[in-house]
Length: 124
Image (cartoon, rainbow, N blue to C red; front, side, top):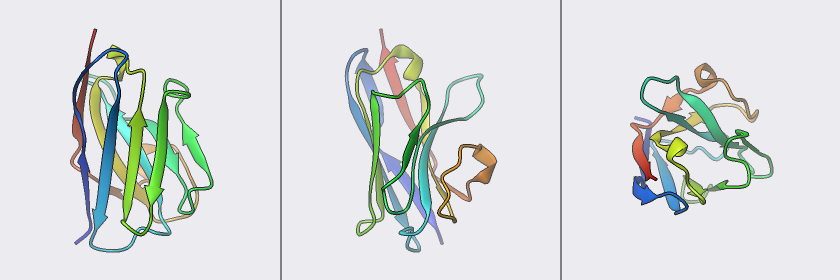
C-alpha cells in the first residue's frame, strides 16, 4: 500500500521558518515527480513547489519563489520543503503529492498519490 506521510507543520510567527518532510512508503518513488500543494480555508488546493525525479528541475508558485526550497532524497524516499520568511498568507494545510511520470506539472488532478496533510499556521 502506497503511503505519503507529511510532518513538520506547526505554528510560527511571521518571518519565521519551518521545514516540512514527506516520507513515501509502499514502493520506490525514485522515478516519480514529487510536489507540495496547500489548501487554505475556503480556497482551492494550489501548487506550491515541485521537483523531478533526479532533482535537476524544480518549479515554484510565484507566491513562494525565493522563500521556499524543495529538495528530495531518493535513497530515503523523502521530499522536503524548506519554508523561510513565512507570511500569514502561507497559512494552510500542506500536502505532499507524487506523480508517476518524469514530467513536472502543476494541476492538482495530475497527481496520483497524496498524503494526509500537515497544518502550517503563520501568525502576524
